[in-house]
Image (cartoon, rainbow over all chains, first blue to last red; front, side, top):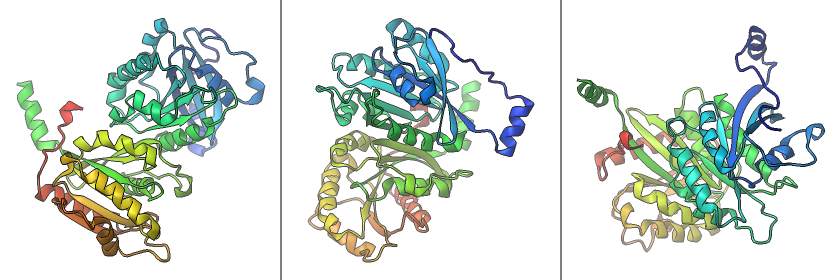
Length: 196
Length: 200
């Protein structure tokens, strides 16, 4: 789990390029999953993977892990970043190549909403994000819990209305059953499709 | 020396940038309108199939260039709970586009109340307002002038210039007309300086 799970050469070879030219190869998108620890990033990604690759148990991510899955004729390479305080400085190294950012929030964790907001601010102020158009998808996770905040309340608490240079979307999700995830990924796909 | 050159470069090539808010009730067609605007003004943009547009919960934003001006378009969700988010975008905007579903007469009074709520903000005083009576392709669509009359009745405080235009976001033919009007309105009646790109 720790470190790179499935590495992939980023340099397009001749064959790759030919396949792209012929339209055989799928478009590739790089998505960055960030969020505080225990917000459910790995569980969300686990849900998105094909059944045969699904993990039975999800344990805290250390460092980061890379996953691949296909949705809507686009091949997604997902960087699942660790959310632990120590690992958060790692995030910024992946901003540059990301086509989109998914920010996962624990909607039951009112206390640390402030921390999440700070991390979001850091993300927005980073040069690799602020100078490009990066759609940001917020997933208000754990909506099945009784004391979960609604997506609107989360967006108010997170001051999402201060974002005015990037498109953003928020949806409530339940990572375990996958409720709401589809809708969010659909939005993300439409946002990045034309830029791949 | 560098700052001199930089200043000259900016003077010669920098385009004035204005922020436009696209508001209206839910299902008025704001996101469809934004998509079609993108297709119209962004070269090489293919666009999303219009039947796959989902209700906006958040913000869709796009930069377009119309002649020598740049517009930053903000399309916000129109659902009732989301209208609270409109507030924070209002101080920065230079113009307002209000979309109405012209085929749904029962909606007009709700739309009027929402519009009046928005126009009460002092930051919006004197700013140009463009009312788009959308969905003109549907049978029973009310013409733009009548929609505007309905929306703007009992509005004594409307001091900025305004116009109404009937469009169909699906066929997109009147979109350039709308932006031409908006451009003229913003340039001819300078109320706010353009957004400085350095502050972004």
